Length: 293
Image 1 (cartoon, rainbow, N blue to C red):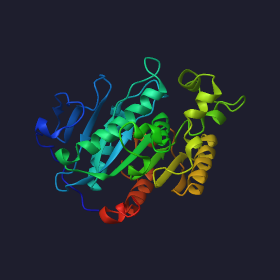
Image 2: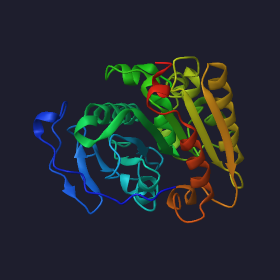
Image 3: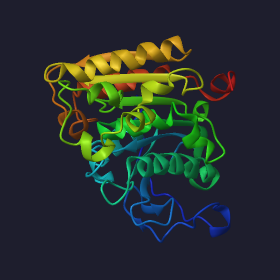
Image 4: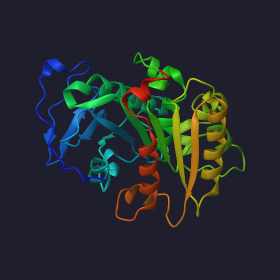
């Protein structure tokens, strides 16, 4: 594909913004850093966009870290340059973390950041109808929850079908109840995040909401060598989403690990990025993408 020069986002007039006024952001050589989509210090995102495409489709990345750690910097290795070269803007977000906040707060933050990007589309030269949610590990859970349980986006006046597509990278928590069942081998991150109340675990499980409405297109990638449970949960959710009317595909990536999937995403020869790029190329554009909305 044609490689696009990385560009600096121009200054935006404050009158163009709705919702929380963005905090002063540092401007790097390639993007806007520390844009506030809310009032909490963790409610910020970094946005990188190609300077020769306007409006540009966007990938909003939700980092992993067991719902209690990690940061938006996990999406700032190879990814911005790689996806700008594909003609996509790249946004990587922070969100509130356990135990100072709840998983519910994290999901609300993903919905708010998504809505904020849509609201700032004209100012940033991005396409509000072509925003892809991508998450890794716990971030994949939050992205999937917002893209299935309609009440998160309803709080922002939106619905899951306003999400163009969802990309899950070795997602955790796609079926919290099953993952936390006795003998299932849940990680040490699950109990602090979800507690022992099975009803709450079910409320925070994307698979509980696989019936329509959902985001229309899904790609699940998982480490095909080291943790087969991630693949099983991805297959289970993908199957349920397909029954609910969405398009969903599951791909095992071999020769990688859970952390390499995100740390090496977009590097030369990266197998994960190759599958993601193929998926992005398959997405409908403009008028076609609006046909079913």
